[in-house]
Length: 363
Length: 244
Image 1 (cartoon, each protein chain N blue to C red):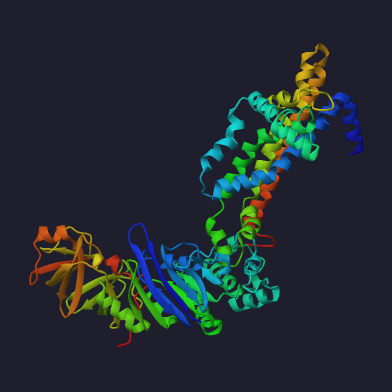
Image 2 (cartoon, chains in turn cyan, orange; image 1 turned 90 degrees about the horizontal axis):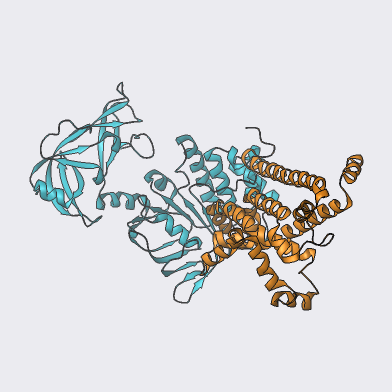
């Protein structure tokens, strides 16, 4: 079964204008927070009304602006697992699992709920209330609850975002198991590269309400980093966990101080530097809290694709490249132009991998 | 238990008993009959956006701010024997309101309505709409979501609103006496009886006994409501059979 989505919706600060198709397996909607990913899921579920568009699931039309089809939420057979689990606080775990009403009209049987609980590793939690569960357990209940309603499409909205590393690994393993067993298309919203690479067969990259790229995750995610504004640098770990918990990396153009590295001395790690996290200075900065200063040369200055008031300044730093996103006004005040030497300043905390510690990579 | 009831029966004179029994009857009927409409109104005000939203809100609150005697008089005009609604009810259902206990129940229901709606509305507004959305994605229709999610989670507020309305009905005086007068055995509720007893020199003792009864009923109602509300909150927080 396929889900075909084409929708347009005016949001407060941008227009969501999206079209994509997702088939069997996991399709990841990837992009930064606030790019409109969650809204897309809500539109597909029928919780948010688009201004225009057409959504079909298999041969069923769920929404069509032109022919005025708008199937109500409870008749769409679309399961949605929310970021915050949204378990019913007055019902036990078993009560939550059994809540779903199947598209066929039948209720979820106790036997099905029990076998699902077993699959989720929740057998000894059945009588508990949601308030007594850990974040990982609550998220597993939410996933099980959605699956038991036998949806024809399962959507997961950053299901791992509130979880610590151990729980994350737990739920991720469960999701892999479900992906191979469920047999329905799964839409998976995430801004974590590693989750998408691990789970998804197809990735749709969304920025500012538009699809900027889609295809196999490995190809697409690498590409979006190239086309987009983040640069991933290869770096070697040369000093680990000094007294204040920081580590030092060597890159082609100098050194980087970063928090949290989960690698051995001499290992190669990848560091992603986002354009918004890079400041520029004409002189070596002094009296600044940022720990990383890299001597660079400006290679290009061009209007930013991300915002009309800013410019992307492309930099060469050793053999690596960086992009700094700064305002047009700063470009003017500093009279920046290609060829000029400049200092790029990056806060160490901006280099923490959002999913946790930086991991070693295979070369 | 029967001893207590017997001595209580002896303690209150027949006139006083009549007033207590009638008050309980009027308050119970007023509260239970207005509860469905109260729930609907509270739900509409809390969850629906429609033209006339603020007009409905103002209308519901009107009995709270109008002088009760005005409310009673308006009821008399509308639901009295010559009133359009009164005539309609009399002809269609044979239901007479003016100068009957049923009229007292209507007056009490109207006066308690704003308190009931307000408490229930606040409770419904406090229910996370995200949970209702989640229920809908699981295939639950609107009515089913209301019955299984919204109302159970708003239960303590619904109890609070119902008890408030009941207590208000037990104590309603101005609108009742204006609409249905003060006829012993027919429309004389506890407050009207207290008022009547205080008008005669020998009535002070009777009035005092009724005052004790009304205090007891009010305090009892509030305690029961508190207990029920606490029990639901407790079962949501801790779970049944949980141990953590």
